[in-house]
Length: 267
Image (cartoon, rainbow, N blue to C red; front, side, top):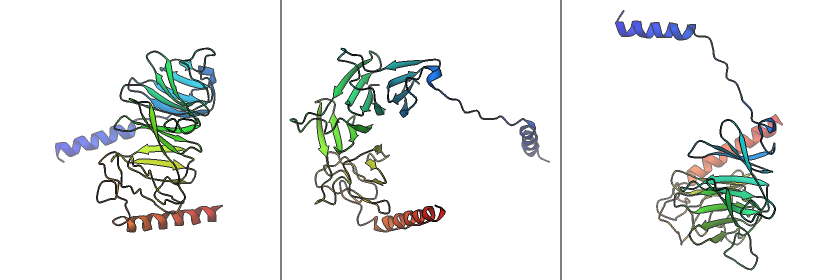
């Protein structure tokens, strides 16, 4: 037997003799100082801290204890509301935190100070709704906020102004729904807004997505694109995936339909 084969046999015998190591599931709760038991979002920052958005403030876990940041009456630079729903981190290390009723908030971990962006009915360039359910920072540093009932909004941090994207029933290439519950920026830079039982896709376009049911797939179309990135499945910047991806959509629809039938059968 060759020496290399002998080495492999010896290693295999050694691993087989080692006892199995059980995996333990740890838990952080109110006993450790968590401010509230309903955790809506978790993010680990570049320094390794864990940030937990709860219905009673923002919690930072340093591995030993929690530090809680919440509304302080009379303090203008604290969170306006404690019911926090989502968070993401930008290139400067600031956290962008969405709240249910308190709008979009920029939190500076170094100072603990909060800058809030709220809806102003008289200002069309303000946040469209103070009910922020999702937030994502794109590769260009712009902040996307998904709201409940107000659609999707994009903030330019340099100007503090928002651009709004809403569902238009007369436009099949508009946002699928104004209740946006989740956001993802994929590897190509396209933004995927999600809602209850559906999703849309757009490449940071003026028409950010298309209507979609649980068993269909949509892609964005726009003649005005802020960037030159290409949507997944398209053959050019800013164009929809209608031609080259029709077979992909059909296969996806078929797979989803089969899954739905299986779920109904099990139910």
